[in-house]
Image (tube, rainbow, N blue to C red; front, side):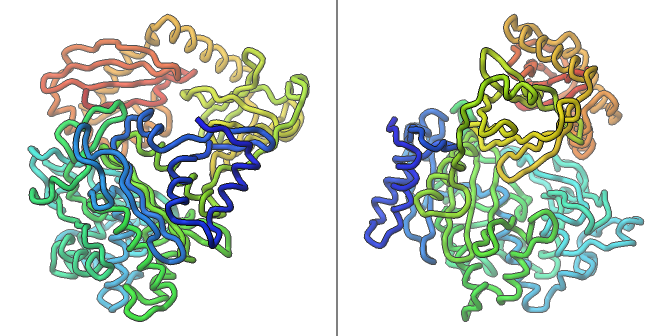
Length: 596
């Protein structure tokens, strides 16, 4: 690795966008001098290369397109479409996953621009194949297309698992009703529309049904004719499954361990939520087309007012499709995506800068963020670049009052403690992170963009945690609570050393499976987050476990460093990898079931 002083690194990368700088030089900077997650003033920092990170993370393919000064400046593929296969090019197809949502949303806005739909009208006015349920919530406030596109319609169904090529693919009505062969819960309104942000792929499937009913076309044909073709997205398609004639041009999906996703790319009939096959260059054309509409250019994809509506936050920073961020002078829109074996990220500034990164690995989420940081530094973006921190020289005693257990509103725990002469912080269930002082009341991490600030006296200390752009407030836990947490951490570390399962893990797994299979899980023994997740997915999970059949054998595999117990569950039809974690109160904090 190359080591550069933080100040030199920042200055050298900032100089990249000068008039005399070449595109090739910028590409080399982006891919050969990738910066660390955090910079510290006065310190030298190792920079790495894309090739090294792809090898370390077992990511076969990364494809990148960069927008500069209102055009696609460069687009290149790195790696291979499959292990021992052909190299990736800028024309290799990836699944865009949830970046499908803003592309689909633009199609809805085209319908609104021509008066064929009203974003504020009851969506049932446009639905003929299916109807939103008539309940007190929807009588008080009807579901609208604006609410669906901004995830504020109160609808469940965060994401979708997709289907194997050998499986029967459900119709849109079956997906909305959650009936076989659909593998999701019924799409339902669960909170008052317009009052709460709740990310919902189910809401986008409902909007997909409305588009098909209004246009009289399949969603894939409508979007091809109304969005993809007009924007010059010639490589892209919403066809699911992808036609066999195009199979040779795709990047094969892989797991985090480098093994291929069993059965190959999943099929996603939920086109609006997850169904787009595309390239970074085509997604860059989408971003540029939206930018042209914002500027009111002739023959733009939508009118300037409609483009502005798309990029205006409704709730919690989400517009009609993308998320919105940035300073007042330099706004950007963004969306990420994650299907089985694919991770991708789009960032575009309204002033004609941006980038798209697509990968074919479950580890791609790590590398796409690293690449975006590198691009942000090379092109002097005001966002996404590594933060520059200041390290303060303090005696350990100056930080003693910060040591303790802190509790967030949702009951989750963060622990700040001294270990082997260093300060570390950890969320229960996650690996500890070393913290460094920037003052006697502020700590920061180097390996993640994390800052924690403290205020108050020892007994009433509050902690404000900022992870990236997200801030949360916590208060110091009671002594009794703190002692329970410390005991749990001690037992977790011992179990990891000895590789022994938590005594109640096996019983909890069996009880959880039995409750889901019967349709009556005991939510009292779960954390609020797990209870909410299982409650949303219960019909689909019940159907899945019914197909799996009886649990024949449950075998302990290992304890990881975060206190998770991993088991192998052998059912009649298949085996599952089961990961469970119990918290300091004995409740099931998290549970994960995956093919294995």
